Image (tube, rainbow, N blue to C red):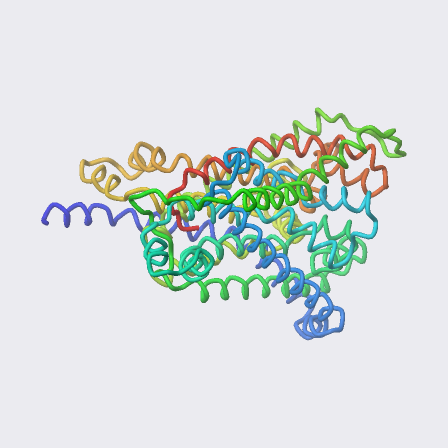
Length: 517
């Protein structure tokens, strides 16, 4: 007992360091929000209120809320259903399906929108946006739910079946409540991602806060109106975070790792055929349609009036910027994940939520905030690759944090405490004990940020250094010019680069054992 107390006392001095680093990271992530407040204050709060309560804002609010609700619900249904078929049934070719179901996430949403709208112009508006975003984002729910299903304790479900309840009743009353943390975690990221999406909605001609903010900043040069709309979007993101926290408070519902493997539900021949056809239809729409359309446009003449850019050069810039941002975002997520996981209380909860709110900010706002700060405080990095990398790191920090925190939650802290009791410094404990324990989560965070940065569009359009292009910016230029054949090779390059981290990310989730996302 005495030794345990001594270990604990030696362990505590590290907490202020972690707290300081975490607060510094949170301050960096909240800098774009400070920029918005400064812009609104400069315009005058009376004008901001007038802009917020005009008819256009109400229309955008209705569009955004409807879209977010429909897509989040659809992603939850598809993600849970697909995960249950793959993880809990005798589905034929389960291993292959586990990989293929994740691959649609590798296709950028604006590329999916381009493939649908270029072939079926009728796919636009709310219905088109729901279709495109659901097909692209459902893997964000599938991945954590599949991990939770794989690691769940079979005792509760077996007890329910022994009491005479059928498989459907057992799923609704026992399995689904146990999956609530995973479903809410995935749905949260889906909803926040929707709030910040721009490219797909612009292609599908569906007005949301992001498309209007971009138009106000870049076309109308109306900074006050764009700032007011951005503040409204931030408030929506805060409401989503608060709502998710209230709904997901009950820890008793979380799935816990069980000592025994779950027995799979045996599908009848008819059931196996129906399940396989359902997954074929899903993958056909989410993966087959975009890939088939890209192949079609690749075979068409690449006519365009715009100047060309080497695909290899654009691919190199895309890879270099995205990899650098993934390293930075993962490094920033580590201290925040360690602190919020190892420390409980309101301060840790507020810190965690504050780092997620940036996910609801459009890339354009973050880009303009960094331009503002660089011009006023660091002019040397204005229009530099470093500024674009910083924008990516800020934009996609929440994704890195989710992956790192999941691994930290599974790493036993006692090993670190023992290392500290043996006289090792906090830095040596971090490098020799903590990092090796959570290495899979760090790799997953890198892959997740890299994948998302490769497909980022709005911040890249603003911050790309002069004379350089990425695959996303070059694709957007050709697509905006209706040069679909010329745009297709760049879209294929985006998909090819993003496919590798998508597979690796799927494998990491497959090895997770009930991590709290």
